[in-house]
Length: 221
Image 1 (cartoon, rainbow, N blue to C red):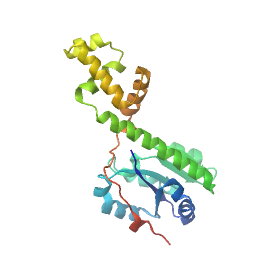
Image 2 (cartoon, helix red, strand yellow):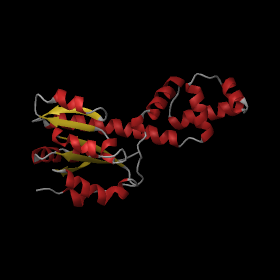
Image 3 (cartoon, one colour):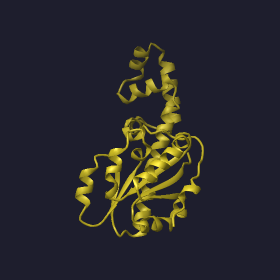
Image 4 (cartoon, one colour):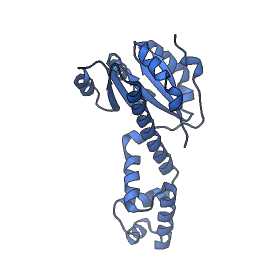
């Protein structure tokens, strides 16, 4: 499943944004820069509807000065649902890490090396896209297949599942075969690992449907 990649940079220092522009093509990503909360608020208001209906993977790169921005956002605001990388001057790491309870993917000190930032962003996108694929895959299961999956990972045998669902063992085995094929796993251990990822809160993110580009709002001096 191919997702468009968009890097959101929250920093009043434009050099961070310009640095990421230098390797954006290699990541196949767009880079958008916001120097204050008002710019973000206006952009979100303009694009919120489109974001919810398109296939996009965001990664948020922010300076600690923007920490209060996350506090002001509701759980439905998309920037807090995606991987976040904090960039800060040396000596502030402990303060920054303790101020963020969830969602921080990495911490990189300023001034950062471009290869370090590129590697961190690639890793963040890859993890999100992997989890997004798992999420979409499990949501494609039928109700019976998902019920069977939950019982299989709970350790129930086909006979026990048959009795609980009041269906034949042959039907249970068919459901098991179908869900293993759809989730692309070959063992119960692999199924359990994928199911755990699906059930985690990070994987309950909406995955958009169509490619989308933001070129008009990406330009900065």
